[in-house]
Image (cartoon, rainbow, N blue to C red):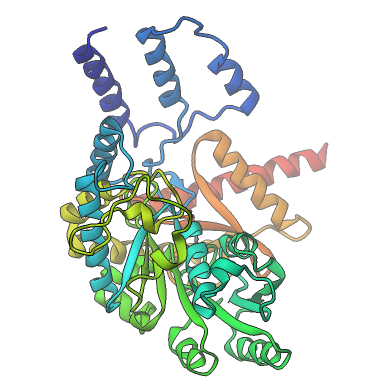
Length: 476
Ligand SMILES: Cc1ncc(COP(=O)(O)O)c(C=O)c1O
């Protein structure tokens, strides 16, 4: 097939998919075994056959989850902004690695530009940063930077013959903190999980007590990871008291804003949820979550540490690949990274930023918060539904209230599962204070009040169906 024909065909398939992305059900659900049979993965033996290749593409799209669909309320991301989708396509067609200026000149300059822009927005002075593969890795790099800031010799000597180091996080912090503690050699026993207060924030008196006890035992509290928007509950740890504690214990204060860090685009929301952020040591934010950039798109920023990434990440002989810039500036961003090959994530980020601007993104986040307020109010209007905990920010933790004698947890799992299989709605789950909750997140520009109403009615209708079936069974 001629190249133009290939592109014509591809564009027509993609355009059709894009036009239908909010229509019908969000997924034509099949059990894994059925889907596997239908896909016939061993089939299509003929090589270099474009028709066959397009049939795989069609199959992929037919059974893909339509993440832009208004019934897709499951995860911290949904769909993707069109400018960033265009960026992804251009990135795919040019296929290069963002590790050197030589191979990725435009991407390098865009990444540096965006890093400067974000440092200014956050208010980090004399700072530095990097686009990483997501907040999980950003949390790990921040922890590693804190470890090496405590003692730069750890980079060469490892953690042998060191005093015991301890990191502290909210007990509801993301699991990437545990993985980071494992990877950087700290050990998960040295990651202290601080119980939360009624708002889901680290209990400060508890934190202080644990730190004092560890210091009294000869340990070093070297890192506190505050969460700006916990994964299930959406709670924001309080930065001001943590900064005061940092003055006493001299730890590194990292802010994991993977989810709720998006408030920085709105002055009012930032003041409310993240005051004093500009005094933290590091901050991470996912553009691929609430802000809608195509997956993955993350930034990790450091305050007042212009060369921390080079000091922490670079190691080994990289002379075969990296070159110094004439101006003494870092020319090749790969030298600051834990990877060698790096995806070009900067183009989609830059395009979204230029297309929507800070104002557009602020409006989006403010609108999401208004919708969350509305959703929580609506939940309280229905006898069948109950909030598991009051709303802190963007997360609505609620569930179907079961009559006495019906186990709430198993019932709500069944309810969610049924909505998934029917393709009517996909909503997340999690645990708050040991209780299972449905977790409604609104990160989809195609969701407004009518879609929230439809969703809640679907939950109620499905719950009532399940109850009626149960009653029917009990009477047999
Ligand atoms: C608070 C928090 N931190 C970190 C992460 C991990 O982010 P990523 O998926 O970009 O690795 C998540 C993801 O849900 C999160 O909720």
